[in-house]
Length: 445
Image 1 (cartoon, one colour):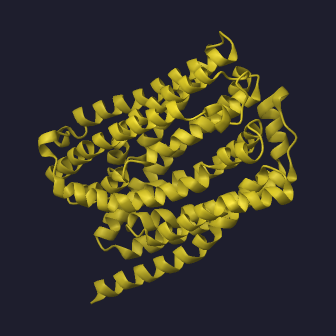
Image 2 (cartoon, helix red, strand yellow; image 1 turned 90 degrees about the horizontal axis):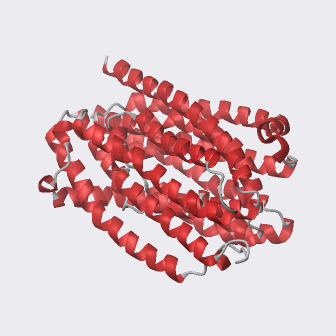
């Protein structure tokens, strides 16, 4: 009965998440086209994409508190221990506050010090240094505030309400799209500055509203309070979260450096073409992640409850889903040019066989990575991820540099991503199999 209920909750989350992600895909597609109209100079648009890529790193510098809290809360909710949940949530908010303050201070100093025109490889006549610095500081403020507010996402995930976390991200993207569609005054530099302000509002408001709603309704008994913070629990959360942080940072060094490396090794305008391909193929990854994301918290509960058979069943299903998604990715490659023509209209590009082949290979490797990572995360088994991701992150730039010298195309950055992920796909399944076998043996004894 419990297994059936667990499966029903996961399925409900997946169905709702797919509906939300379907809307998110439509918003994402419309946003790229709207951006191309909003910024006629693709170099400026490329800079904006790179700004977002850089700032998104900050969302992972929460000492892993969000993910550590997610796993520990999943156990508390499984035991129906609301008092312990209140302690955990309160501790999470209290510990994260000084972290955000430190990030804000250090970030402001760096933004004031760095020559961003040189960093983005863009002429001061295209974007003035003061405008670029203003856009950086305002967007940075939005990210830091969102970092603190996103604790509510960890709470919702632990409650196995992952669809609602997807909804919050969707609301942020809708806000940005509406601004880009309807704000059409001023020159392009003024638009960049205004867009950064809009981004701050869109990034913060949905999470602020969700926090208010969750702790006045669903979890009113677990509402955070400074007096309930427990420093012993803080060490446990940060200890587990610290391992998640290392995994996150290493993975970000692989997946979010694309725009930066393309800007450094090639040209900022190439980032726009990269984004067109990336939006199509990342949509496949997003759709797959919708199915795998609810698994994390469910596995955490099953591991706590010693329900190893359920974990094995889910692992097998995710592997089969990865195979199906890979075949679908190949199909997308075949029909990509018509998709781009319909999508971008007069702004369309000519699809490159090399580019779509590189993205296809990279997407396939990430699909299989996504099939095993939720299992490992739910079991708090992070050693293999830390080693493999860190190694891949270290190797990525030298590999991109070597490939760029040989092929002179921004697509080498995508190809490098695929190559460096292969060791993880080999080692992690072996490690998971051994861990599950050990736990089964312990239970049988």
